[in-house]
Length: 163
Image (cartoon, rainbow, N blue to C red; front, top):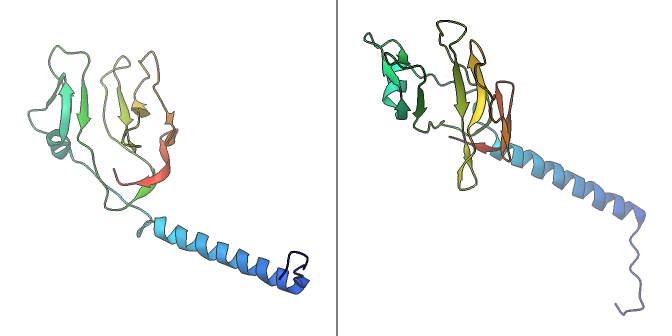
């Protein structure tokens, strides 16, 4: 075809081409959804007190009770913390609902739950998922970052992870 010739495509062919493109796009999106979806819609992980205690990466001011049924503050300590080793799921996820059980002896006592997730080549900031009893802290804490957010106590991530 020379520079002066014009290629004319009949309207029916254009419609077929657009329909073909739409079908290919739908198939691609469907296939992509299957690739990134979990084999099981729900994953449930529970950690018992003893496994939590032995998975502590660092801590301060806490101890395991004598009967090994709870983690508590050491005698004479009014503030403590624990950080668990990274936990991994069997399947990828991008949403989660963390849950916990605990007690605080009075309205001046409480505990806060924070999590962080793999992000870029490191970790997200610590995100506050919730607290129990009373919000006794001067600030609630961070609830979002570039890779996701905490929507009340529901974790919503922008990509699939397993840690």
